[in-house]
Structure formats: C-alpha cells, structure tokens
Image (cartoon, rainbow, N blue to C red; front, side):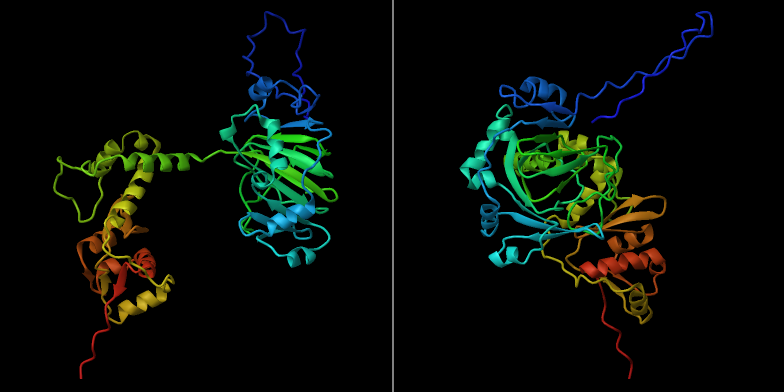
Length: 427
C-alpha cells in the first residue's frame, strides 16, 4: 500500500504580529489509490474515462478481480508447443539465484529443450500469442476502450517457482493479467529511482532496484504499469501471466520513417547549395557556415538536433556519400606499439584512395576526424594533414602525438589509412 505522508504541524500560538511567515512550498498532489477492486460493470474498478485521466501513462494500478472467473484459454503445454515453431518469437530466461544472474536462451526450441530444464527458476515467454490463438485474442476485449492501433500484442509467460526475467523497465504501457497461479510483483514509484542497466547480461536489467511496493497477484487480478516504472515479477509456484503490451514507437523511429517518406517525394533537383561560399580556411574543414546551411535546408527536422549532434551526423554522412567503393579493414586494430614500430621502420602513411576525409574543430587544438563514415578524435594538426595529403612521411611531426597514434590505430582497423610498403634495402 502507498506510504502515508506526515502532515506538517502548525503552531497556533504564533502571534499574527510576528515576523511574516515564509511562503509554503506548493504541495505535490497526492497520487491516486494504488489498488482498487473491480466489479462486474466496472472491470477497471472505475469508468474508463477516470482511468485514462488519473492513471494512464501516470500511475500504476492494481485491479483486484478485474477478470474474475476468466478461463485461461491456453495450457503451459500448448505454450511450449508454440515456442517450438520456427516463426514464433520465444525466449527462455534462466535465473541463477545464488549470484542473482539471468541468462537468455532464444527460441525456437525442441521438445528436448523442455525436458532438460530444471524444476525451478526459469521462465518461458512467447510473443504475439493473440495472433496464433483466437481465444487468447479475446483477452484484448479488456482494453477495448483504447484505440486498436495502440495495442501491440499479448505476450504469454509460463514460469516455474522462482522464475522471472529480473528487475527491468518497459518503455510502453502494459496490463499484466494473472492467469494461473500466483506471481509477486514489486514496483518502484520513486521518480528518481536508478535506471542504469547491468553490463553482465543480454537482458536489459536494472543494476539497482529498490521497490516501494510489493503485492501478489492471484488469477484474475490485473496490474497496469505505465512506461518507465521499475518492476520485477517472481513466480510463487508455477504460474502463467498474460501481458497486454502497447505500441509506442520511439521518437527516433517516427523521425526516421517520416524522413524516408518525405524523401520519396522530393525531387533530386533540390540539393545542398552554397552560393555564399568563401575560400576554405583549412582543407577538409566543416565550418559553422556549412552547418548553418545544412540546418536551414533540413527545415523542421533540424529543430530536434543539437548543434554538436548535427555536426557529427553531417561529418559521417558526407564522407560516406557517393562512395565509389566499400572500404573494409581487418577489424582488429594494431597495438600502439605496432603503429609506432611501423613508423620507426620508415613506413609512410597512405590514405585509402576511396576514403573521403573531413573534420570539425573540437576544442582549441583537437578535432573530430571523419573518414568514410567513421569518426575518431585526434589533434587538429593530424586532421588537417590527412585531409590535405594522400601520403604522410613517417618522420612528420603530426605523427608524434600519442593521441595521433591512437587515431591512426583506429583508422588502420577500418582500412581508411594503410602503411606503404617497406622501403627496399640498398644492395
């Protein structure tokens, strides 16, 4: 249950003639009830309009008995059989209790997969079960007050005792319907709860999780969670949970799709132009005037892009644009010692003939150097030298800086630069 907030005490004996009281900070409005009971005529425990106003994308809500008497239309065996199909997206998550680790085993599976599983601490999750089973699809009637295009799928999970996917955050709304058995859900309603992820797993799990509320869901109970609420569900005995997830495309996806749609209808005659061009201050430099033109030609899209991000995007894009060949390195950067040894042996540095180079200023003496779509940070002198010269001799001063060697190592790995052949020894 929500924690009660202590009411501030007032001092009634304080004289009205005393020094003026400091203005009180405006109290944050109290969150609505976290738990309600459903009824036959109000499965949400309230009218849909009130739910949307008070809870939707704002606060979690546990609805007891929302689907009381609902007959689960699919068995754990049916779910396992579905997970064996090639076209079905399924996952098994194993929980290692002692070390608090979770591992992911993607599908599809064979029957032998399930016979080899331990008795506890694992979960099977199958996406889009509503597309394969009409009776499961009937569960969507519970959210018929929402636009149909907003609803994504019904994911069904079967968990053995102790099974779960670990503490995590979803970036979309979800209704967690308890079908069989009992699952304990812990959530955090703390606005500033940590959201950093663990680096030791393929799953997007929280590195820290301190729940503020915990409750067990029985069959027919529904837990609504808005986006970005830290939560964790653990099975108390074998159980099945049906998750009704919403469609929530990222802004980056919306912008990318819109840009592609608009680009399809734009004529090739509308191109980057610079009638106000002035002599270049340095070879390969992308200066502020260039970025101002790009921002103007992008129109409304540019309003979403910070100046630094625009420069980094344009540098990568323009050095890839109309490339005549695909440049590929060995993918394994040489060590700094190897780079240094090659230079000391008299090997000159060569630009790949198909690699296009450009750079932007990065601080007083630094630069962000772009080469065939790749970016490295390096001294400004090296950026200018690589943009101005197809060949740099091994004794050139620009190659003596430690950060220059680091940049060269990375450029060698992607094939944008290479060492000349060793000079022939005189007879």
